[in-house]
Image (cartoon, rainbow, N blue to C red; front, top):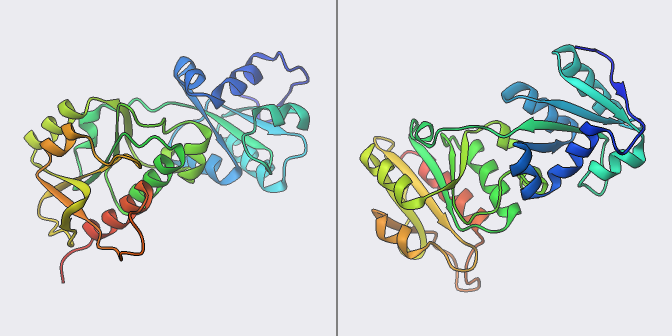
Length: 263
């Protein structure tokens, strides 16, 4: 593989057209690929995942150029494009000039059930909340993230940006049937907790068991199906000045509480 980027001048270049298509859920699903933008996230993908190819703007920052050279030294192909063409790929207001096209992970849902703490999202429709929840799960030691059908994609640019690249660092599977997955989890010895404002205040986990935390949609909370299958509803005590917390904030606080051991 070349250690110098290939020069591209035309908007009709096949790789450039492919990268442009990855701003939508439909394009991502069709290609089996997604886009990560920025030198830090590209470096994370190089460390934790795989990169198919890079798109580098000719006015990219030095940090981006360094990250691209590092990836090319490891055999990753790169195309170099004029700033105007890179802007057609970029989804950020102030891009640094580097994007990676990465393959979607192919995770067997059963593989998620191998640790001690797992996050599941049920009907979380905002990509920013999905990405932020994934970031919290990776930061707080969860073994993976399960996205039930009806959730926003974890791999649209808004989600990957909100995850701070954590989509490359933690196993996740999406489009899962909640009943089938939760029944498999219970059979494998997992305790199923669902976040609900009317639930029991969350307490630190004893870490002797395996805990699956389910966070529901921003507007409606967990579905009836999921609530029925859960072993326990847990809540975050908050003041009366605020009616509720959003899904991503709730996920972060509950994961933190559950990742701690009792005093």
